[in-house]
Length: 592
Image (cartoon, rainbow, N blue to C red; front, side, top):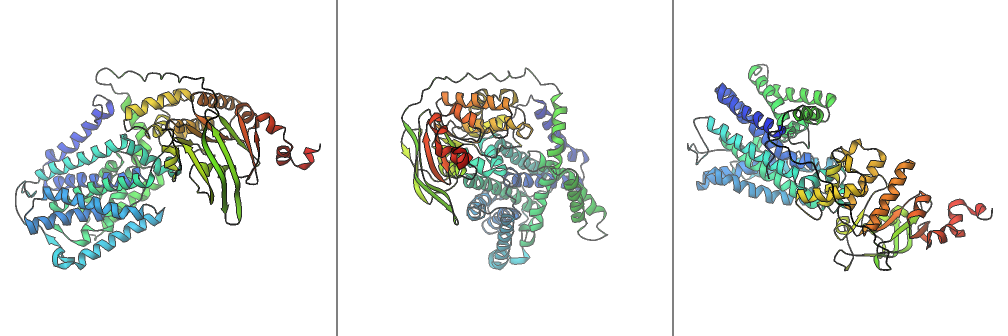
């Protein structure tokens, strides 16, 4: 997979990369060559960190552990066995990947600052272990590489060779990052970063995907670290397992724009030259001046452009580049998807069964012996007063809460009855849901949001986009495909929630108050959309306070009051039931 080189963004980007490589060759001084080697190395390190820290949103502040593992592995292989650093690159990457798996299993289940603190602790433990194993690591004194000149040993008299390798590694890491961002994994990571519960609802194994990102990031960091330590020709625990290095590469990404492709590069190319020039010019003033420069720039960026350089200015740059000519004939516009066939009829064929569900939260009984059945091509409405336990029932049915007692089973896509565990298991068996408070992935476009659901059944981006286009037609989002979700109206966000759930091709759809907060026009559109969804062959369970919509749409209604099923039946039977009138309006109204 490669970008379209005829597009302005591609050829402008290639031009900038060519300029970055040719500039030090034209200047041809040891200072500028060394500076650009460092720029490419630290850009690559920051890009690698951005995969787990930016895309997945896991703030790792101990990432230098993989830099050090790569450097020590290669150095020890060269010193003890005469093995080339080129082989050491891959050996260190393999060990770093294995260590990342071991580290990720417990730490990625931590939230917020606890994960960051855990990574710092791991970094410090590994540093102390390396110091302690002095007999083969050299302890705190470190190890110097043998002075063997040549490409086999990655040591040169002509520093231009280092520049070529550093640029090649930078291009490789950037290409891997681009591939991830455009792939199913990249979409999943961004979804996890923004709304982990919503990601689970479209079938994402969040722990597995975060671990996958951590392993890729660790291996890339190790490869680049091996080269950098070979370039320095010396490795010691203080520099190889440095907290300062971990913070530095994270800071470059933060200043440039976390979660963006070009952000880590922009941050590195802005800050590192200033810091290195300050170190060279102000070295007589005192040590640590470059650290002061880092801090000043970070404070300025956080206060003025908190989304980073690319996050804040990228839109303007993209609009300017879009004015440039496309080289050749532009691809055809997106074709309109064919409308789904309609006309399915309800059948007395159960597809979802819940039996005797009990759930307590402390001393509060949220559900009390709730049982219900959903039939094929049926719309089942669940109503009840505020606090009756409707949302708890929805969370039980979709796996977000485990019942204390009772069973839930659904008919899978293959037609077998199954019981599920985690929410993503339910999604993969054909049950999708929306949330009472809409959870769009705000930094993604409408098209990308819908594609997240489609990616559950395919890893092919083109196929996922085709499914998303079809669902966009069904949910009246066709004209908004390129709009970021953060810019949608309330009605648009609600329809997007439904679209993302439908893109996973469910057989059962749970709708949690999709009409709440809508104006009359949007309510009419929502009613028509839900009818089209049912006619496309999807069975629907809906919680809704909009009684007019519930009565118009539902084939059957279940009334829940005080955590228990009060009654069930057709809309007419329910609305005329004295117990329902009493639950909603009070005993006085029943006798009025």
